[in-house]
Image 1 (tube, rainbow, N blue to C red):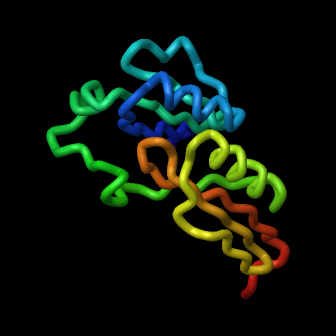
Image 2 (image 1 turned 90 degrees about the horizontal axis):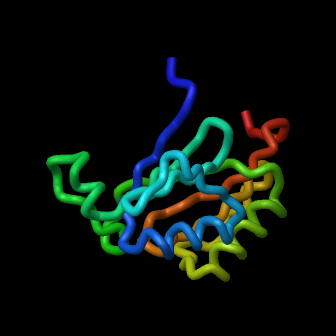
Length: 134
């Protein structure tokens, strides 16, 4: 059974992408980072490999999607509170992200979304599971 998740994303400018995500409060594991990749630490078990476009292409035989024109994946991360969702999305927008959907408040679940510098879509979600409808 898997114990860690590694998300691999192509980026146009690795330096700018590293700076963007560190502004959101994430760290970079330098042991797995170089001029082609940055290992973004999201949690103890979730990592996002930011890969230069040319390096990313070495891992696939398919064309690489332009995330500013198509949606290739929605990355959903949980948050500890509604306020954490609001704070993280505000930090992302201040760091250059675009908001592609307005916040959604379902009572028991609050979510908001942003697209990073390369157009990859991130969903930040707080769920009060004790209030989940049956």
